[in-house]
Structures are given as C-alpha cells and as structure tokens.
Amino acid sequence: MKDFIFCDINESMEIKEEAVKLLLETFPKANMWPDLDEKMAVETVNESIVEENICLGLKINNELIGWGCLRSEYWGKTWELHPFVISTKFQGKGFGQILMGEIEKIAQEKGAIGIILGSGDEEKLTSLSEKEINEENIFEEIKNIKNIKNHPYEFYKKCGFMIYGIIPNAYGANKSSILMWKDIRKNK
Ligand SMILES: CC(C)(COP(=O)(O)OP(=O)(O)OC[C@H]1O[C@@H](n2cnc3c(N)ncnc32)[C@H](O)[C@@H]1OP(=O)(O)O)[C@@H](O)C(=O)NCCC(=O)NCCS
Image (cartoon, rainbow, N blue to C red):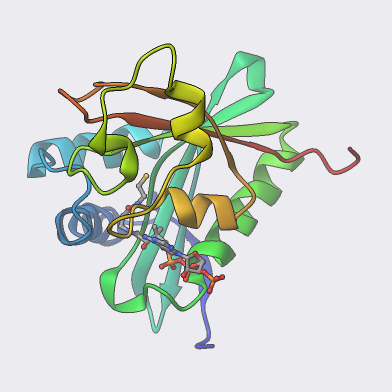
C-alpha cells in the first residue's frame, strides 16, 4: 500500500481545482452521474467545503486521489454522504475503504450515529433496472439485487452499508436511486 495522507479540500485553490477535476474525470468512466458537467462539479466542491460539512481528501505523492463529503441532517445524528470518489487509476486498492473509515471516525467525533447516501442507477448497472418496480416486488427486488456492471452499491455494502429502500424511476423509467444507510455507533 502506497503512503497516503488525509487533507483538507479547502486548504488551497489548487486542491479545490484537483477536486473538481477528479469528479469530472472519474464519474463518466464509472458510468455514474451522466449529466455531470464542469459547472455542477465546481458547485459540488463549493457546497462541500463549507465549514459545517466534513470534507476530506486523500493524497498520494502530493496528488489528490480521492475525496468525500458528509453533510449534517437530522440534527447532526445522521449525515448524508455526497460526493465520494477515488480516482480511476487508484481504484480497487482499498483507498475507498480507508477514506470512508476516516470520514466515519470524524463523523462519530461530531456525534453522528448514522450515514445515509443515495446512489443513482441511471446507466442501468444493476438488476433493478431490468423490471418495473411496484408495491408487490420492491422489497424482493432489493433483497435479490445483482450487480451487472460495477455499480458502487456493492462497495458501500462492503463498507457496512445496507440498502434501506429505493426510489423507483428516480432518474427516468427503470432508473432507480438506491438508498443506503450505515449504523456508525461505537457501542451498539
Ligand atoms: C466506488 C469507489 C469510491 C470505490 O473506491 P475503491 O477505492 O475502488 O474501493 P476499494 O478498493 O476500497 O474497494 C473495497 C471493496 O469494494 C469493492 N468494490 C469497489 N468498487 C466496486 C464496484 N464499483 N462494484 C463492485 N465492487 C466494488 C472492491 O472490489 C473491494 O472488495 P473486496 O474487499 O472484496 O476486495 C470508486 O470506485 C469510485 O470512485 N468510483 C467512481 C465514482 C463513484 O461511483 N462514486 C460513488 C457514487 S455514489
């Protein structure tokens, strides 16, 4: 494992620009966030680095290779993760889990007991995109979800998140949003 350090995305203009670049370069390659453009990426970074949020980067050899942001909701007890990214060339090496672990630790110190996120399936990367979802089949389809093409829900499951629901057709017909939650209490 290469040496890495955590950093503050707000520490310099250069890091903020690297954070924007990382979003723009990584998401399309992963078939995620298809309508992401430069304006949205800049807005996402600017919204993320505000004082109230937890916004943490991961650097290797002085290069930003990943970052993630948590926003406080539910009176600080539950925080929402958005965005979360590891650069394509460093994926699959455990850095996503390392960054998530550190972000969770900071959230715990601030009194958080849970983390939520919504992960879109706009490019039909999971079995949820193969059927009409309705009242009869929704929970069965969630239970039997299959990853067709590297949707990150599986990464989050490996980080200890569970799927608590979906928003069917969130992004259009058969394009769900997958809703996930993790209990981060230390003493359960
Ligand atoms: C999803 C992402 C953050 C994962 O980061 P990473 O550094 O590659 O993940 P790790 O190497 O820590 O992987 C941890 C485990 O999750 C698995 N995993 C990671 N990404 C996965 C994916 N897309 N599909 C299936 N499994 C995945 C790994 O195989 C590994 O499993 P193992 O412990 O059994 O070996 C990264 O791939 C990424 O930034 N993707 C593009 C942007 C994105 O989709 N962000 C999430 C938006 S909601």
